[in-house]
Amino acid sequence: MVSRVIPVETFDLVIFGGTGDLARRKILPGLFRRFRSGQMPEGSRIIGAARSEIDSDGYRAMIAEAIAEFGGDEASDSDSLAAFLATLDYVAIDAKGDGGWADLAQKVRSDVVQAFYFSVAPSLFGDLAERLHSHKIATPDSRIVVEKPFGRDLDTARALNAVLSTHFNEDQIYRIDHYLGKETVQNLMAVRFGNVLFEPLWNNHYVDHIQITVAETVSVAGRGSYYDKSGAMRDMVQNHLMQLLCLIAMEPPSRFGADEVRDEKLKVIRALQPVAPHHIVRGQYDAGPDGPSYRNDAENPRSFTESFVALKCHIANWRWAGVPFYLRTGKRMKARSSEITVVFKDLGHTIFEGDTARHRNILSIRLQPNEGMDLQVTIKEPGPGGMRLIDVPLDMTFADALGADAEEVTDAYERLIMDVIRGNQTLFMRGDEVEAAWRWTDPIIQGWEARNDVPKLYDAGSTGPEDAMMLLHRDGRKWREVKG
Ligand code: BG6
View (cartoon, rainbow, N blue to C red):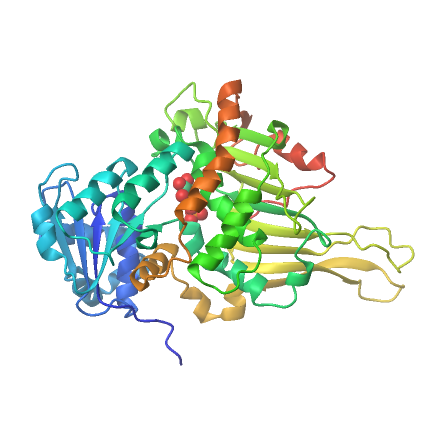
């Protein structure tokens, strides 16, 4: 059997914010899985850096606990865990002062791949970048990894880009959007550009409209103070949904290279038309039988922040002119379900007399859960009695098709961190892409602020406010059912 683990070079990975939530929930459990699969070469080291005055043993104990809690079944492999913990080190560091930096400089080697993960508030990016340089730790080959939120509008994103670019070149900066690391999101590109079947139909001659839904059942409880200043538009649409839109709508890149792919995505964002206020619906979840209201979760009784957005937008280019893209995302919805649906146009003429029903081919790509695709096709209803047509799904659930291999699908963070070590930026956002996304999002948010827009309440456990249904009904269309 061919090994699916592609080795990377020996590395030193420094995680600033190494004791934080993301490090404990995602980054370190993900690295442990890569370690177990044999992808972390011997001699590689992970150095946690944070304010807490703990020593390396204290850090190892903390991470052992985190892996036990968030690492799934693999955490029970105690031999591997012990070997993994031995690769960990820790430095107590002061991002805004000089404490700990000399210690860090001693630990980070210059003859291996160096990556610095800024898992900290964006307000510290500048301080970290500056000190990595003034303490002569970073080299021209070092990589830095930054998380969303990358700014809260165009100005703040520009300022962050400027701060980072003072010390690092664009090809050293890895801006994470974890949706790009999801297996099925990458499958979007494989489906589009690896098959001859779809591409000829992928345009306004054959596509009626496209829907992108990212529905979540979770509330904002526990992260209300961040979320209430953000809302669904900044938290999900500007980044995750925008990336999905780009992958579904972009032109074929000449090769699967970082700049080729990102150039094409950027063209999509730049071609997005402004969204008219009546083409967008904001919602906020109300209390339901199994949970409190958004305002309660956010601990802000007067909050006008949206936990749901549905919108219709257009891409002004030859391929997509006239094809609406409907996007929707929300918290506390009926089911956890992310799906992209391409609804093809009706047949121009039917030869089947007496068949008055509307038959449409619909391709839906399920991102999560039950990753897979189905294609609705029209066939003859079995049995005698003439030509009666029915629509049936050709269903391909990847887990069924791929068997045991599908279960090994790597988590988005694992894949993305290994891409950083490999120096592959294809699945990371470039600075100009992020800015272009804010340039499109800003006027929408500013419009709400100027109008003191009040989000429509929706029942927790529903599919969002009634107005979101109307957005499509007005156009003679309907949303796909949200089902997990
Ligand atoms: C994060 C958002 O970026 O993505 C969260 O901040 C959201 O609000 C999460 O819940 C969704 O990610 P996933 O992988 O669970 O779909």
